[in-house]
Length: 201
Image 1 (cartoon, rainbow, N blue to C red):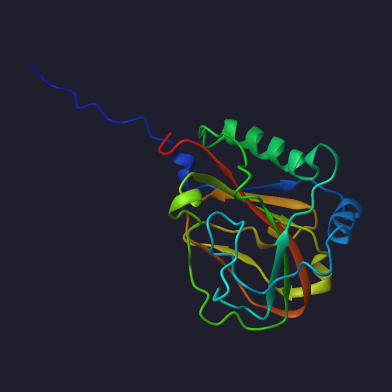
Image 2 (image 1 turned 90 degrees about the vertical axis):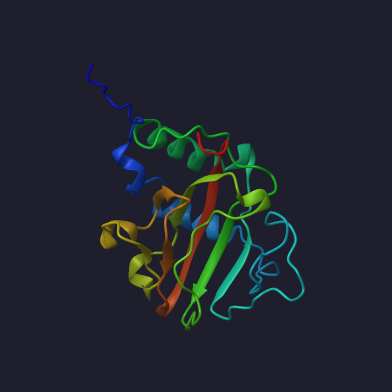
């Protein structure tokens, strides 16, 4: 009797990235305007989750962060989560549970400067980062106001022009290698965050 090997169900979208417009330029400007000028921090968050920042955390002079300010009904995170869940259902089909309180999104301000030492990385790690499933990046700045600062995905074709569109959200798996190029002119604002779920589902 001939035996047919059982193969696992395979999803060709595991190496897929998606991008689409989610905010208008006016909404992007309002999100940036809600930032607290006193909360920008050049230290890389390395504490449990993204709540604490250790005193000896790595410094990066050209990249500053603060927790994303949330408005009524958790705006803009509510709109982001809805869009990511919709596109996940059509593509990766990961089991997602949402955004936990100890790994909330960051508002990022990247200025001209070298990020020497920044290399390809994945956004999965120990503790509270171990359940990250999908990464999202929201472009808040007018692409004409800065140069560089592009999101690069390892071995995945990138639509550079689409990725730079103001108000666009880019989504890709948290296990995929990625990095950002240096900003060579101007200043770029973005939102970076993750949707979580049960491991390996």
